[in-house]
Length: 144
Image (cartoon, rainbow, N blue to C red):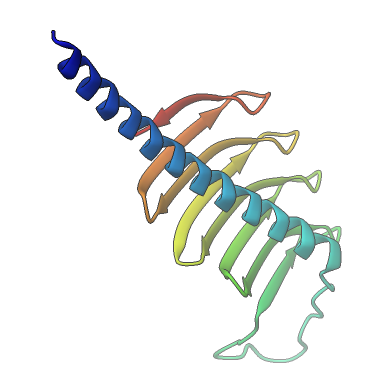
């Protein structure tokens, strides 16, 4: 293999690494945005009042908060400036899943019982990405 061939191979590998890095940054940005949105909504949301009487045919709102029998928030559906999001909480009030379309890019985030992001699936302008992280937040597997 000549020096030129080696250089060309290294340039190709560098280009692939840069593409993977851009995808990872996009997914991390999406994840950070979704997590921030979930915490803001959970911290400032007013409890929805039950409507007396019949069932309306259509309900329009910018935000819905679903509570369990104890009055704890279990799900939040909202439309913010950057797009719609659905956040799901476990029985301890910990955010466990977030589905969003922020700035036109869909993403799904799954969190462990400690609130650490463990799975991220997104489609960004750079293409699709799937990332699996360990408990410390280190990516242990990703595609592409």
